[in-house]
Image 1 (cartoon, one colour):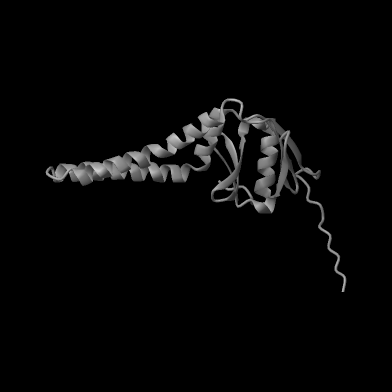
Image 2: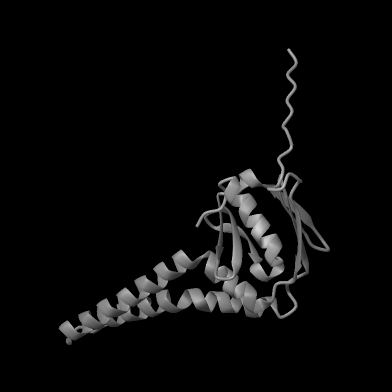
Length: 176
């Protein structure tokens, strides 16, 4: 038995297919801010846990002055939890250098988004994203809890950003 399937084309808000192009080059500072925005929950959990350990260590050392070792150990671990996320992000930025980010072209259409650099090209359908949101000057297109496509808001003209946001909200892809 032969089955044929055809999917009707989906159109933008004004009855024409959506086609938005954006060109940008990410700066090292933008990349740092973008990763902070993307991983902000785990960043906050780590820093909060670190501050909690510091407080516990100080309290432990104050309550048992004869045995300061465990309290100081907790303070040291708390400092690591509080400072390590930022240190790792800054070391990665320094390691990449100032010219590490290639110019990127992003194309949004009715089917998904396509990313192009001078050396590669790849695309994802809209169904491949688990969550799409705007936060801290970035569009965050999550594909998994620890993976995302980050697009700085400056890469899109205001009219294109409004069209993209309306498109995503109409299809219930945009999360607040």
